[in-house]
Image 1: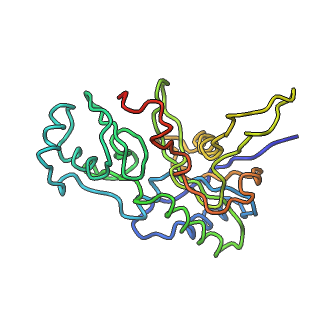
Image 2: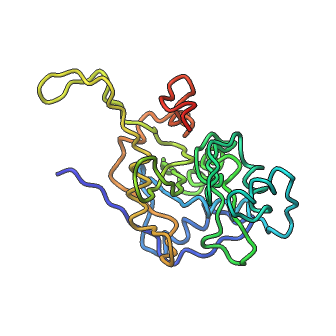
Length: 257
């Protein structure tokens, strides 16, 4: 019978700038009775990395530009917050009341460049995404392997809205040691028909599975371990979440926003 397990690490501490996340993860996993095995996948909320990498900013320290002030007036936001968003933005896709939809400098399409203030101490504090989530995942992956000797996949995740669907889901924004896709193209289905477009974004599905235990409010379980999905790690090679982003030439919705 096919199966896999998902477990959240309980009593994970609040993270401070400069903390060794891999060391803390192993320590807390041990306290939870978990010994890492080859093929395990660690899914971690991006905010943990943002805090460790000192990506927390106070609005009072931000000086808004004239552009930020103009946009802030049109959408009803604090101009200092808008300036933070603009600093993380490659291009603005849509401006409307309460919403600033952008492509951020990592290539992610998201509201407010992924900046928010949930689960962070201090009313004036806002958390930005890691500068390079793939690089953060790679560094963490290497450190985990150094400390455990195990081949373990890493997925850094964040929660995003989806076009044409209500509600939010978890997406992978950084990864290491794991293939982003399970590609069925060129294979046949049950009745011998050739599959032409089935290329499943496995890392996004893994991120969604982890979110069921992570939660978004007071759960305090930002790290989840998946076991039983070794196929996703097989022959991973050098992988990146940029492989998940649709290039401009293939974008069916280009110039429609």
